[in-house]
Length: 416
Image 1: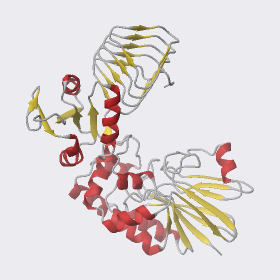
Image 2 (image 1 turned 120 degrees about the vertical axis):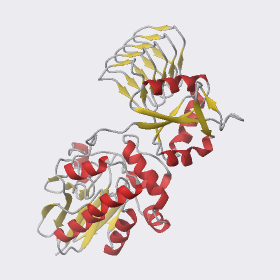
Image 3 (image 1 turned 120 degrees about the horizontal axis):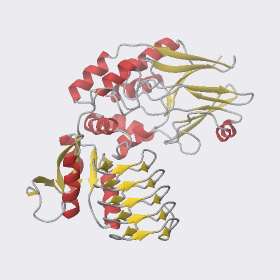
Image 4 (image 1 turned 30 degrees about the horizontal axis):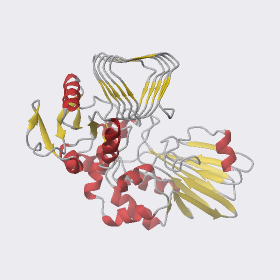
């Protein structure tokens, strides 16, 4: 009889992992659907325990971010956790994580199991929150084991099963416990595990290393998205100390939730000086070290030229930080508008309902963008420009100062 233990999203939480191992009882093999690292601090210990178990593991998006130096776009706390982990996670653990595949196909008792962190469309990033027809079609003839969503999920059909055991390490559903599943293949049965545990070793290590204290609230409440408690001011570094950089610095100063740390700029002789009373901390090559030193997770790229802004932003994203999304307190942005990371919206600008603004777009003071308009990545809408509704602005297009773009316009060669 083959019994399989299914786990996902351990996230450096060794006490939670030990709790589900104990609750599962004897199993023939453990399968881990990724995200061994990230969020919580005991990454080396979790990796060693999984290796000792002989667990069949894959990489998740946090594991990849740790290895490749990226941040997590949706979370300053997660980005900071990865910055800290890059200081101390051992080379042995890094090498093991790097050796893990993004997908596993295994056979037990003539049953095929496929393990992915995300989903069939994107092994690392897709979030399968419900079982769609496309997911059922992919799962036909197999057991599909997923993670990433931090919510447990199971659907069993005549010739398929889709299972997400839920998070071991970081709960998101309001239940403060560690989750797993045990799959009994001959009996065609599945048992869900939800077990409390003592998180003291995790909390102690977080306090020692300077993790975001809201993680403690998350572990206590079982709620992850948005955390609980008041967020501290977000420390910010601005790349580019030119005129546009000074404008963005004034935007940051007007925002009560931002603590401006300084500029980085490659111009000769600027490092060590100040621009508009804001220190120039160093060059772009120093960004990763400066961000780690000052606990910075958010970096604004304040470069006016669209192509240069894109190129610098790609470099910034490889420094373990995320592109800052900044909206001036005196700008008006519809609640239904969608702004990607790296978007900067200055004072008196207006974005109407259902606008979609791509990564790294600069929207200058007094610009007006009407409803249902799409703006491609690294475009710029200059001061006083007006764009009518249902328009499409391609990537890297510059909408000139004071210009009027009629409704239903398409500007540029490629759609946003």
